[in-house]
Length: 64
Image: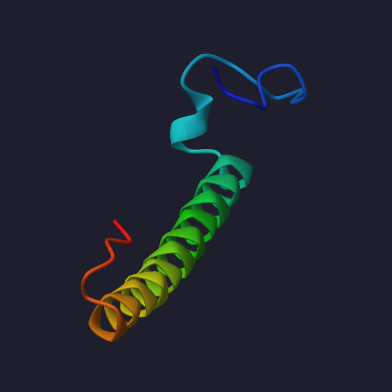
């Protein structure tokens, strides 16, 4: 379901393919998802690094 369906006075079936507002919303969502993915990848690597360091310090304890 398109979020603009109930709000847009110019809505008709298939209009999102050529709508400038829809293209802008879509691009903003893509950029937001890209930023979130980069954030998660960065922090996942940092956490994994800390776990590896802890495991090297005390190898007989399992942190996993």
